[in-house]
Length: 118
Image (cartoon, rainbow, N blue to C red; front, side, top):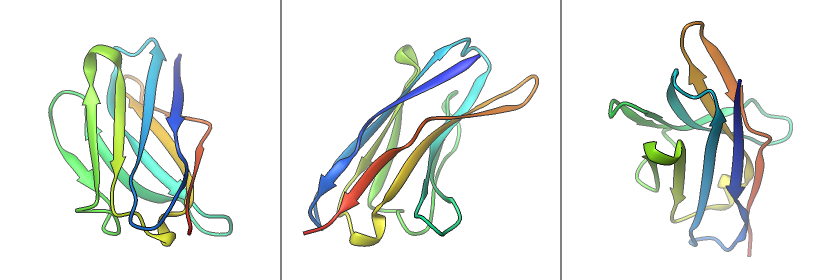
């Protein structure tokens, strides 16, 4: 079983920066992709960023490309999301996920609140 522990988040002013981290623990050998989605109450969950754990593709949602950066630390089974130039519309609960193969399973973190407000 894979467990995800998120950290970071909080309140930041528009234009500011914030960093999120997500650490995977348990049986992580088959985890091949990790990343983040976010959700605002009353709206669908939105893709934010993903990274392949083997050095493969990195992908960003259109609304965050150029402002957010996802990086991985394979030694610690951790991914980090550096969020710069934050806007009020980035306010959401951010959920970390991990995709596991053989068989495919999707694991989700508990979510961490990011609020961008002056």
